[in-house]
Length: 469
Image 1 (tube, one colour):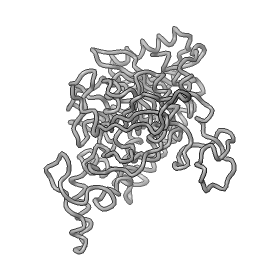
Image 2 (image 1 turned 135 degrees about the vertical axis):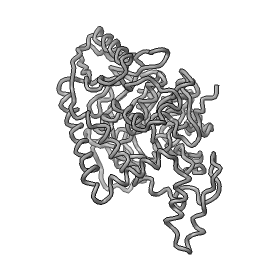
Image 3 (image 1 turned 30 degrees about the vertical axis):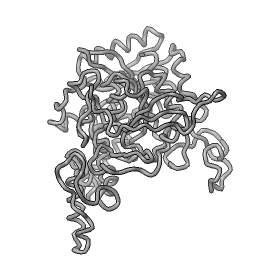
Image 4 (image 1 turned 90 degrees about the vertical axis):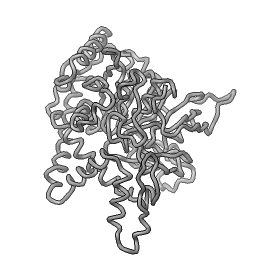
């Protein structure tokens, strides 16, 4: 069955292999990598014709850690172009099919990664989550996906869509396997200033390479340093409090809500107290998210111009059009025309739409009207979550408010596609951790249960997800 799961299928063996005296955490485990995470010597396209020939000269930190943990990489997975989409249909390399039902989308933007795990093409996978792009496909494909707290996992080597929102996260068949993968990829990274160091004191040699030029003997340690996330999957949940976010049940498919309610009842039977919480700010979360994400994208993607990155001239893969040679117009001073021509052919329609909207939101006269207000709304969302966690240890919602759409259905209405993210984007705005775990099926299609935790509360959401599982 051809699901179009991989853009590039290539095996990369571990840097270190287990022996009779050493057992590595991912020995013998196969891993699929989303195609926006850099892999040395392996083509990394971001699902775009713009990067059809790009081969990174280095590994992302998470890839390096996988190889050192004994994992075998099996390929780079299909994705919505530059992570912009929720169905894996905006890829320049064609849509990925959902292994559960091939007439339906696998979710996105990490749809290829979720499909690889659900179909057995890989044991586990890595995706990236900007507004739900790990949890969405995990829910639609009936697997487990974790969006870590911002700063828990290094972003070094991730080709950015929206820097302040996205995190690399694991996808697996079970909560235990996802947590084991999180154990491997989380932790401090001297290459990434967005990783956190705020949980006590540790030696600088614990996180920096021996030849580090750091002149400090100690720094505050990373929140993941003393933890083993996999162990949390076996811990008792009785006595915990789970808050049902009622705002995110309104407007959801009735069948999804019914399945979610059944999972909540199961948690209650295990000794968890269930309360209802409401966050008024969530009414504005989707709008704020898209203004911020598109604004950051318009800046991040400016470098793809055919000079620094992107094809300098010639035919693009999967396209009959020819990208003009930028250098040919330099002497004539036609840089803008050349850049525009490269980007017109190299980018897909959804990427162009988001760049244009983001540029507009940042332009003179509109920055305060849109971008500044979106940042204000983001702070409101954060404050609402803080208040909610005074009432509950973990918050719960359906991961997605709808069942997986049929292939081709969502592309006709971009606004409908954006609104589908209503349950996932608030987590990214607040930089919180969340996990999606299968809650059941409706008409043979999976429904996901989302558990949201306080910052660096990965252990507690893993506990609840394991109880649902």
